[in-house]
Length: 140
Image (cartoon, rainbow, N blue to C red; front, side, top):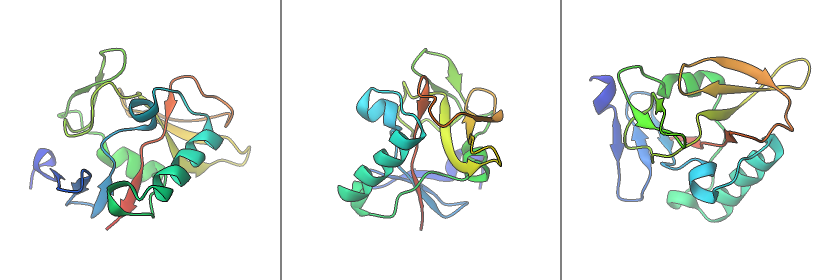
């Protein structure tokens, strides 16, 4: 299986990652709501998507930094909100944010994010909202 054929769209409107046995929502919170999210707001978005049973499920969550790194692939190209290249599968909805919250925290209570343009992970203040989004995952 190549990296490009491991992702599949399915009838419930979610993306299945057959390699890692995960489901992903195709839109991030920026694409869905048109607003940047700080970490608390990202968690509120998770609760909302679980309340509405997005894709028929109520166990969505923020990905770990490892899971976030796993969807990044330099061979894959999609456009973000600034028409820059992000390296995620084209099944994910375009015009997304390039910064994505993860569930990982450091000893200073800063939250890890990934830059989908270059795969850089860094920890930032949880109150930062500009250019931050939530992209949700669940285990199959």
